[in-house]
Length: 392
Image 1 (cartoon, helix red, strand yellow):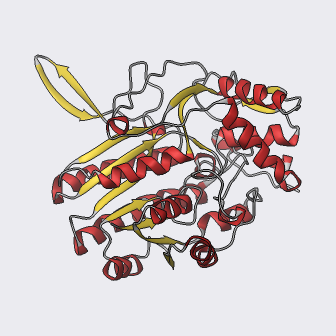
Image 2 (cartoon, one colour; image 1 turned 180 degrees about the vertical axis):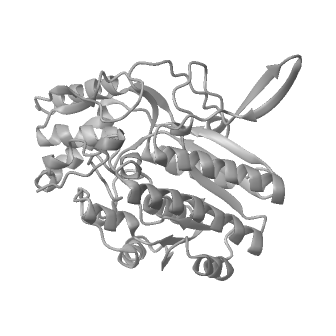
């Protein structure tokens, strides 16, 4: 099918483009390079320098023979986005074009305003572009498990049946986001649900847990095709950060007691989940929600696994608890459901010691690029500490 990827330059967007391209889909990507600019402004450059989108697409075509169309522009610019839809006529759209960082959203008023405006306006523009050009086009939006928070009951897949005073009704599962970023993901989910009911469009919301990993489908033909891999406190996910800390000989920094539990998945499973969702669209007017993760771990569990893998590589990996910059429960109940994607045929990749050995070895290959100053948290959730600390 013809698939348009919004946010196609990012950690997940570019690998998704390559994955779908080599599976025979016709792929186009759009990006405004926000993440690249923010990494420069925040002084948190990724592990590997990566070419820009036209260069990546040309390298991909030269090495594989597959083509990826590229457009550089802002999804919040509706005339630009609408023209993309008219020219490419996508049958499916993958929406990654949102500011993806909880710490960035909590930094200050300006970054909060950008997160709110960008994430909600980009989603609204996408909805209207689909409705104006082809309402049968299936929207696959990257959500987050973080919208649920950590309730003291099981987390269902998107919906919850409630019995009250002898009657019952099914609602969207209550949301308790833990950052402004997660709040916008809650709000855009409500917006998508609203327009599903009003305009009968097709939407799948993939509530994804934190992702880890560097490569896709085994070894890449060229490291320049690797995703933008952040290991810092702003854009790096926790396991990617731990792996980089281990490779650098730096203690693994656990926020608080480390009992925070989340659902995690390998980047390979992200790509498989997106393709499964695209290949199996919901009926018109249905807002479908999948909880997209494979395994649950506490932060302590992850640190211990990385330490074990490091020992096999001869690394003396230490674990250090530091004050938690976030406002979150550090010990809690956590039991989310995630049967939807498994029922569609997902074959999960599990977090084994072998996977961690491969990740640490890959990062060690570029150890000279690591900057330990990126590891420590610079953003605190308390208002009077909502600030950035410059790095040398």
